Length: 204
Image 1: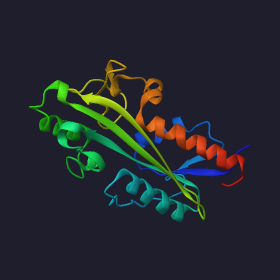
Image 2: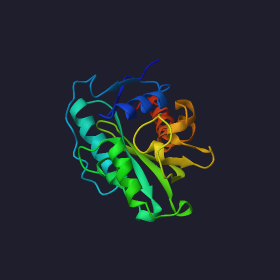
Image 3: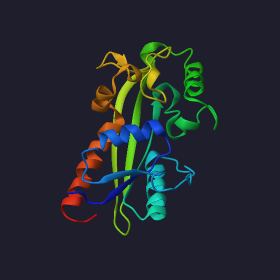
Image 4: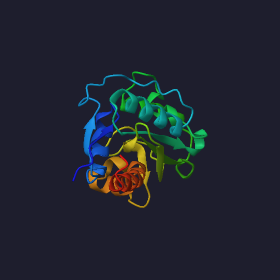
């Protein structure tokens, strides 16, 4: 039995596909911003992933009147003191493409040896319940930055994020493989478990 609708609040088509796959077994009908006719873009003014995820979840829950799940995620490179971090999508400018952002990142790491190019992806998911509490769930994936892009799957920085335990970049993984190891999948599993629990108690 379905427990109503849950809004997946992202305008990023790649992220929407990933989250829909990851959350597909939840007892909710998953809907997108396009499904609800919401075109508003939230200014991500937070200084942390947590702040931005909360900002988006609360804003879209208020606009839609629906339980709303939103995430903020990004790449943190140790040799760059955690850059690009919350600026991951805007690292090379507001209108930059994924290729532009990757090229900009690789230029900044040009003189950094392979062993010092450690990095991790981090994701924070916020779930806002209209008139109820707000939940936060996080996940990470450890890796390092390659010297050149490899693979054609995924999006964002996936082609230059090498995962030692897999022996491939994230863009070289199939969607099923990525969904077993990614930062977003870890956070989504936690969010799905908590949300199923609330649905079972009738608190949605």
